Image 1 (spheres, rainbow, N blue to C red):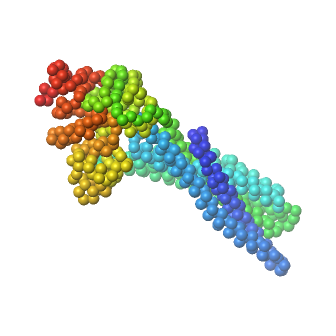
Image 2: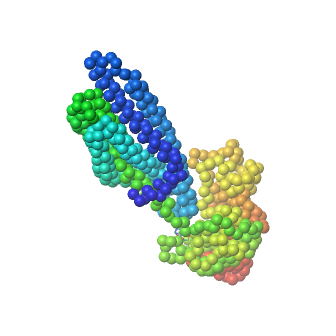
Image 3: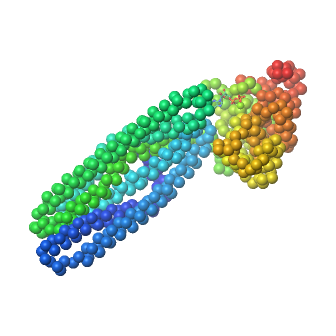
Length: 574
Ligand code: ATP
Ligand code: MG
């Protein structure tokens, strides 16, 4: 249960609404008990008065009381639902933002451990389940306890013994049943939470992998797996429903027995009177109504297992400490960018081998560098260290003489433009996909950037409002790359880091794009990772990486003269 504490702490912000919700819940319950007890007494008393020929019986006051309680109950229930749900929604939105703000800094290293569907499930479904905590657990328990106390006080005024008997039975039910049903409901709740997320994961995987599944004929097998999970999920839901039914029937049975007990005890008269009278009906109906107040408590504890399981899953995310943290304020942005990479080594946390081994590289402001090397030699990793996706294990990286760690995140992002190896196209309009790079760019600028990279054809038809990605136009691999470059052109930063920007482009287009990049970066620092050997003569320096080290560096002509690794590569391709 301790796992719930951080979530309870969030309640402090909405204390007023939450308390008001409970006060209204208590009022409504009392009005409902009052209504039943009073009308029971009223009917019985009228009948007795009629039989006795007592026409002086004042029926106005109780009738008004019944009407008043009925109005109170209806209005109270409405107000209670309004207030408590409003409070819960505020709480949920707060909780969702809180969870999301914890997830953001974890990218990309921690998030990689969770699949996307899993993460979404935790953020949406598990956070949703946490709303049970107030609505289904705290509010019903507190209200039921308060109602028992107030009801006992009111009834003891009429008959202490009867009031205490009823209170004892109600309190015993409250003390015994919830732990029992919590125990019984816990494994079901946990299984439900896990199965729900498993089902969603499998469903998204099945939907996303449709093409592959069809090609390899694996669709049926995946479908069966999905059906199997669904059946298990439904079984658990059935078990939960059965448990709910059981708890309800136990409460109804005990309430029936209690009414009989009270009738029997009251048969000799209520309070000081030693004759049976209409007050017996009042006690009988008050008992029935009081049991209604404790039914939600029984449900509450069945759901607590599910709430705790969800809380644990959300907490697993929010408890993770981001490896990379940025200072709140740091070095101011500068107009040019020089880099000093000093003896940087790096390994991915779960791997034993170093990906980068004592890399040294100094890049002067305005220099254009090509980074070359076998696949998997660590080129993308080096670029990612420059963006602080990760921090180096040893050594340091300085930007204009300041360690990268001294820049706040916003400044660092304004200092560099990055085109990563996999360009992500958002399922959004063409305009939104470009505005990402510069939110203030005009439509004209956006169209120009597309024209520059040869994507003018995308503007035909709906223009910038065209929808890309899911549910819209799918882009070819080369078009995606060029859209990435169009974004880079829009984002004005002194340092450009491009990871294989021309991959998948034909030789002609590649040359055009490289020219464009050199022109665009005429006064900027440029680092391009590439596998292609054409056009390298235009770079100020070529660095060849191997085994996590820079093994050769120099201009194209120098490296060709050296007859080293670069020259070998070049000759093999030529
Ligand atoms: P390519 O030319 O194929 O893009 P690269 O030089 O860019 O290759 P990197 O992506 O830097 O290579 O990867 C270097 C090594 O680190 C590879 O062996 C890769 O498997 C590993 N690696 C890359 N990213 C991760 C990660 N997130 N977690 C663990 N290992 C990783
Ligand atoms: Mg790479």
